[in-house]
Image 1 (cartoon, one colour):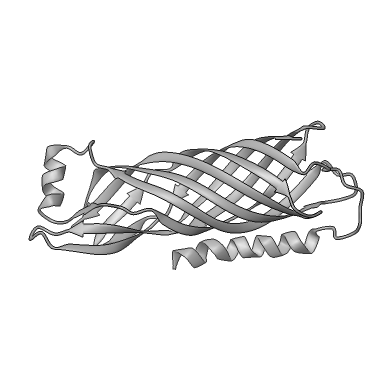
Image 2 (tube, rainbow, N blue to C red):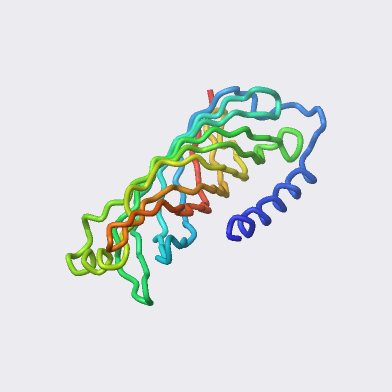
Length: 224
């Protein structure tokens, strides 16, 4: 399954991270308990299939914000939010058409393990995971009348619900100055949203739309 394909390399990278981490009692370079940051991500959603309809998503740019609070020496709580909008293509009977746009706003809560690579290093690596809540919306206003008629005569997807999913990330931070940091991260998310599929005879079936995603992001942070 697609979820397993995404999470196998992620778990492997995490094991590599843990094996190379420094667990000694070293002097801390990152001595702040709180940091806030802005992040920009390039996100790709996996294709999905709902009641025989192929659903494809264009890649998207995600604008995000996050707050990191250090609980213990190596453990940090992260609260984050981000949003994006992208185009949808739907395929039925070997015919692919622009279906509309997909919008998502995400709130996440994660626990991160952080460690310096060496004593007094300006680098800090992290890996972690947690839960995410997704506010989903499909907008079909951009459909042409001909496309709307085509899907109405076959099947129409509507009424997407919000969803809860899993979220994971790994990456590093680099200290530019006492208060300014830059970072790079790889993130994965997995969630399924319920949608209504309406058939020409007005039969409505509830189905799941897979919204698994992978993203690469860069961040700018300020630590207090």
